[in-house]
Amino acid sequence: MQKNQWRLAFHLMPPDGWLNDPNGLCEANGVYHVYFQYAPNTPAPDGRMARTWGHYAGPDLINLTYQGVPFWPETLDRDGCYSGSAFVEDDGTIDLYYTGNIKEAGDYDYIHDGRISNTILIQTQDGGKTYSEKRRLFGTPEYPKDCTRHVRDPKVWQEDDQYYMVLGARMQDDHGAVLFYESLDGLSWRLLKIESTQNAFGYMWECPDYFELEGGTFLSFCPQGLGAEPFRYQNNHQAGYCRLQGALREKQLFRPFYEWDMGFDFYAPQSFSDERGRRILIGWAGLPDKPYGNPTVDAEGWENCLTVPRVLFRNGERICQKPISGLKRLRTDPVRFSDSGRWVMPDAAGDVELAFKDSKAAWQIRIGSGVRLTYDGRVVALRLDDEAGCGRKIRKAKAEAIRNARLLIDRSILEVYFNDGETVMTTRYYERFAEGRRLEVRFNCEGAEIYAWRMQSMPANKIYDEGEN
Image 1 (cartoon, rainbow, N blue to C red):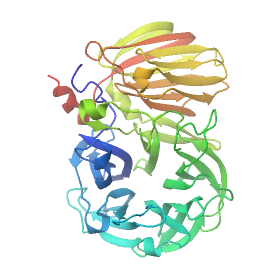
Image 2 (cartoon, helix red, strand yellow):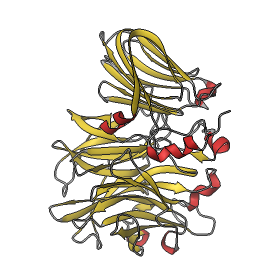
Image 3 (cartoon, rainbow, N blue to C red):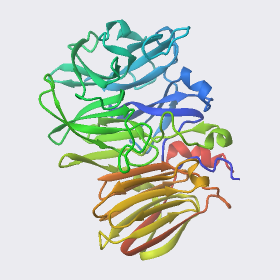
Image 4 (spheres, one colour):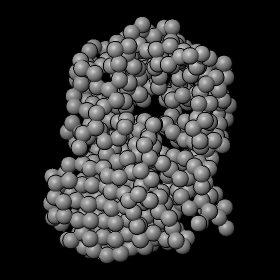
């Protein structure tokens, strides 16, 4: 088996240990920052409770460099620096808001008692070289009394010189909800309102994100506890968004909930607006409490990664996603063919674009020995066999037509974008490479035009390729 065979070429991953939610996404003074939940050195479950943050930064979202751990758990967050967000001040100061987790010793369920969740602010004025002291803004004693101890994941933004924050919550009646706060200075906060649905839509709403996009206002969140349906809510926890109707300071009506990603591995997305005005979303290519495995834990000492950054744009009530254009700079060795064929990547990293002449025609794509994408004119399906899937079986999405598709194939992760990003499917998969990382893709797509490129490793990941020699 090749050393580091599943380490990635163009997806961000931890240097070692455990990675989960993207945090603190921002651009400040022309530098992009991607923070993430991190448990260094320990990919196994016992190490995750003491998790902190990791940090990548660079001039764009391709040329990123690992910056290390910005801060560690202390008194206010002794059992974990949990998820949060970044707000960039006019002078370039980055305000990092996050949840500090404290679990008291004793026989507690840590839902209704035994847990303290502090909302904490820490700042950097030099782009992440140094950080201020941590400041507790408010926490469990100040939250509404009808909340459980599960209140977390602050996202902060500004409108009309006023700061606003959303926090995910689990209410005492097991309704998921979002708490809205307001502030004049970003330090002293007042509860503005609680938003939820009349009937329970999951028992907990994690990782809320409130943003505007092309004239619409949207709330993204991760409801836990939804019942699975054949074409919806197929994972154990979901991630999606609703369009909101009404003013921010009033009660807002929820439109239908749409899932961001219909694959096996997607959760806790966070978005931000960069200095070019793009709304960019990054998700965790993983799941909490997942029922399937990742063999990188034992074989390579790390687990999980982030999705590629995705630019958001609207199509009516829906949001479409497309990989950032900068990824195309990593393309090399272009190939073009039609209908069907066999394409081999020597390093298991590639980018494929397909245009279907007949949008309702059936087709099939096989990736390696264990991954299949199929379309029958009504349903697109992603199937993994036992060895490649490690417990992942099948995910399906309804599709009246498939006009085009884009496949990002990266050693142990696959992202598929259908119809210009109307439907997206992300999965981890584990090919057992027989020689090097040679990966074969077979197309059976009558009438399709197919363009394929090998993908080079982005700078942050080249170190792992060099370590193989």
